[in-house]
Structure formats: C-alpha cells, structure tokens
Image (cartoon, rainbow, N blue to C red; front, side, top):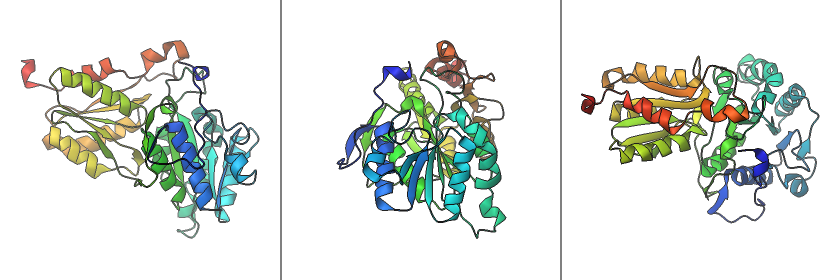
Length: 344
C-alpha cells in the first residue's frame, strides 16, 4: 500500500454537518478548522501545511479559509519549527505544529525534551506550554526509511509531555480538540495507516485526555492496544470469537497520562491480557503497559501478560512491512499461549 494509491484530500471542514461519516483525515481537518474558528490564539504551521494542505492533506483549505497568518508554511527546519512554537506559546498563542513524518521530528527532539517538556517545571508552573505537536506515526503505508517509524516511547518516557493517539475518526476529532485546549504540551500521534479509515464523527462528543475506552466487551482475554493496533485487535477478536474465545479490546488512547483504572479493571475481569503495538518491544510503551498490568493484576492473572510488537530492528522497508508489523495470526498465537483449561 503506497501513499499514491489514496486520495488523501479530506472533505472541506467548513459547514460540515455532524454527526457525519468521514475519514480520520477529514476529522482531523475539521478539528483544526473548528479550533481556529473558536480561538483566535490558535495557529497552525509546519512544512507544506499551507497551500498544499500537508503531505496527507490534513490542513487542506485552512490557509484559504483563515489566512496565512493563522495557517502557514515553514522552512525545512524541525528544530526551528518547535523553537518558534515555544516562543509563541510563551507569549499567549496556542501553536499546533505538524512534523510531517514521525522520524522527521527527531531533529527537534532536543527542543521538545529540554524546553517544551520542562518549561512548566522550570518556572514552578508560572509558564505553561499550550502547544500541540502533531506527528503522523507508524507503518502500513509503504513508506521508506524516515517516513515510517514508531517513536512514541521517546515522548511517553519524557515527564512533562502528554502523549495521545486516536484510533477512530471520532477520537481523532475529540482528542485533537482536547489537546489544543490543554494548557500543557501534547504530542499527538496520528496513525498514518488509519488516515483513510471511516467512521461517524459528532462534534458535540468530547474526549478526556488520560482516559482509555472499552472498544469491545469480552470475558476470556483482554487485548490492550493504541493507534493503528486497535483495528488489528478488533479483527483478531472477531476471529477468536469464531474459535470460541470471548475477547475484550481496550483502546488505551492516552499513553501519558495512562489510565490505570480502566486497564486494571479490564484485565482483572478476564484474567488474561495481550498488549499489541507496532513499535519494537524492547524498552517500549508495550513494556510499560505489561509491567503496570503485572504490578496491579498479578493475583488475578491466569497466565503471563504477553506482548505482540514490531521486531527489535530498524523499521522494515515497504516490501517487508507485512513481516514486521503485528498481524492477526501473531495475536491469535499469543492468545493461545495463555494457559487455557482446554489445552490439556
């Protein structure tokens, strides 16, 4: 699957009636448009986000509607983009920046961890950072090196950063609006693979940062996932149901802060858990979720908590992506190892 195989241009956000069925790309576009319309302090900028509308057309039409002072292009200098956003946030604006591709954000990493994440603490809360960093992340589009990566662990590991990732168009809209409204910096991870997935969006529905959601009820095993891994978990749950397993799916949504209460209650209700993520498994968000579940649910577990992740290698090139990314068979294999009574 390549970028060129898709029409990435979302429907125009202006005057879009809701509830309405739309792609995740269109939902993100609508969220940005609504935020720009609601608050004159919101500004959107990044590489090619202006007249082009962004590589994935998430910002399509925003410059024409709100003007170049509200949505504008920047030089190809990610560190400069974040540095500019920091200055804007310090002076009362609410910048929303796009990093274009996940690995492209790494030149700005020093700015993000040294300044974006720490200014609030450095000033004892006297200076807030109402800043959103949008990062298209993950695989599934046939991108080459630097264009597909899963760098969420870097950000989730950094105190002072909120890190979220939607898996549905509704959450894409609601979580982005919540992120823009937040007084603190948010790294907003957008699963590239899901930009063209469709679902109903109601602009009246709100989302709370730091809250997971139950995406599917089940009684035998809990699958914990986020971003592009959530549809995979739901697909695996359907196949497992045909084989007699009742599978619960939890969409983590917020990587930091993490919703221990919802996740713990879900795993305790089934006694078995599998964590699914595209990123390499070593020292990962999946590792942290696994550890938290073990610590809080040990006496409820019928089997060890398993992980199904990407491999501990650099992200695979396009023709090998299907070997690298978790799939239904790997998830089902993990479920089969969870000490079932009928295994005897």
